[in-house]
Image 1: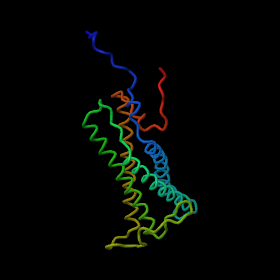
Image 2 (image 1 turned 180 degrees about the vertical axis):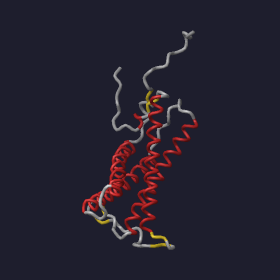
Image 3 (image 1 turned 135 degrees about the vertical axis):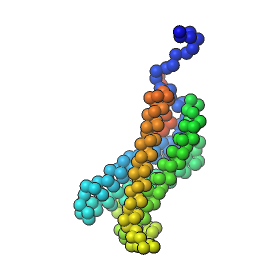
Image 4 (image 1 turned 90 degrees about the vertical axis):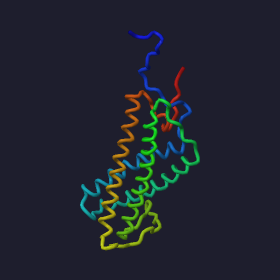
Length: 204
């Protein structure tokens, strides 16, 4: 029998609260970085697997890939500063403590993989003597032009490490998205308003 005093669960997902939102810079850099990384994954795969080596088209896409990578470094710096200086909104109380810990570990993992992915990409370019540029503007050379280190050929080694890191980042992003979907579909908790660009006002 149904308890008449027991409230019926709402079928609509609960939002994370009207004030529980990230700082505007965190929200904007989140979505800009998401778009940039979609391009980076697609262009990286296309260059490695679908284009003739050293072709003009590959070189053009490679230059664009590097430019977007430099843009991501700037966006990451802005996002980290904004998150450090602003208050991070609390997760809804309905989310279990173990899931809170997993969310924190997941976010830290995303930042670490993003940083290492960008650093290894820059190193790969410098080791090969190609140089990093941002839409035609030359960037400082951070790593020396070098073919070998301790008997290891750096170009293929750095390329392999860079690929593993970036595909690992893609896998972690997929887990991140699935977690948001899980909270929305199963737990009836809508986390998207925390990171949405615009605030959706509810009509009374």
